[in-house]
Length: 358
Image (cartoon, rainbow, N blue to C red; front, side):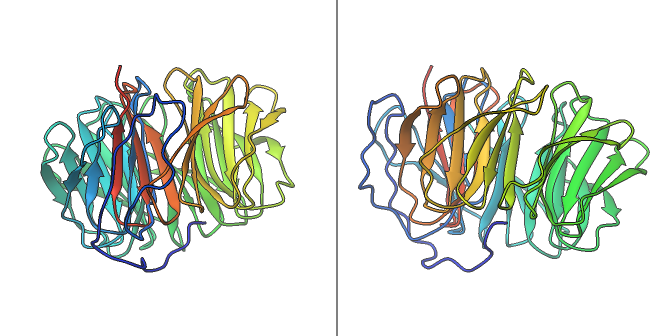
């Protein structure tokens, strides 16, 4: 799991944007001592955002070297960031117990979603973008109306922190993974609990396959398991002896691949249909906290304890470049729905959004 501790420096930010298309990226970027947590990218694969503990959320243009825009408002670490399906809105979850919605074009804060009584660890938009779900250390999963910011419902049942949430592709089911070792499936329409999938160790990440037929969970005991989303039956393990906690998992949008990042620094690519390990990406020197595929499936982004976002070629396994600037662990990475942005979230309290261009 991601380490939960106070940042070394709060509220200091010197951040440079830089071109992601260059063959090499300057490694000696000056930044504040802070640590991001959650990230998202857009479907044109050209931009990335990061969430940090330093309170501001920053949008930076990757196409040119200029000071990024800062989205300020959070009073605690930014643990999770995600784009709406249309890419116009950015949501961020924080240790200040709030979710905030931002206009990506202007950087303006649209509204706050308040109600959680502890850290907001994970957030997810419904496929139609009208509803946002949030999972928290307060052991609840909450649904919010995006347009108004109104809380619609609380799902209760977890007996420890909620670490990860995910909507099914049709938006009818919500999955939540908790520190209690249970994956819970909820019916979004009826608000009813559908299934309990028992993992027996802290569930750090959950992800639906793009066709919605299966669900994958990654847990603290190193298990990477595949489940039937309709029946809750365990179909098979991708691996039962991962040797380290599985911190993050992600499907490629075509459903062919699954990527997983581990606490021991492993970053693996799997054949989603057979469960066969295809390759290991080498480069991370410590925990891999987050993984994300670009919308076209050609690239993989990963963020880890060393505070670097790495970009990989999926076909060859080759590391293409590193995005530096964070001086603390990167906890979340994501591509925007249109692929124009790459986002990274870090313990340094800053969300970084790189515009990768067309």
